[in-house]
Image (cartoon, rainbow, N blue to C red):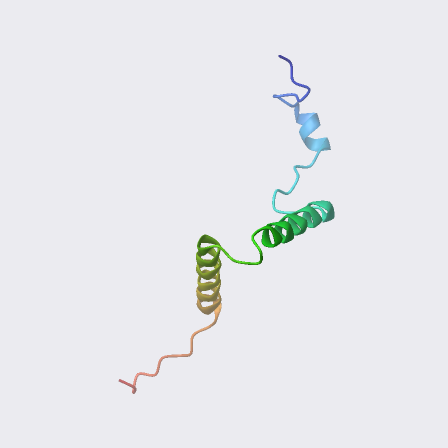
Length: 81
C-alpha cells in the first residue's frame, strides 16, 4: 500500500504550504451544510426531536452565561448589605 501523501514532509514543503484553518468553511461547504439542515427539517416534518430541543436549549443557556460573564460587573458598594 502506498500513499500519495508524504508522511514526513521536508521543512521546505512545510514552508511552501500553509496549514489550512480547520475552523473556516468554504462557501461550497456552507451551502452543503445549509442544504443538509433544511433537508433534515423537511424530512422530520418541521417537528423537532426531543434531543434537538435539549441541545438547542443547552447551547442557548451556555451562550447566555458566556455573554453574562463577559459583561463588566458594576462596582460593589460597601454601604449596602
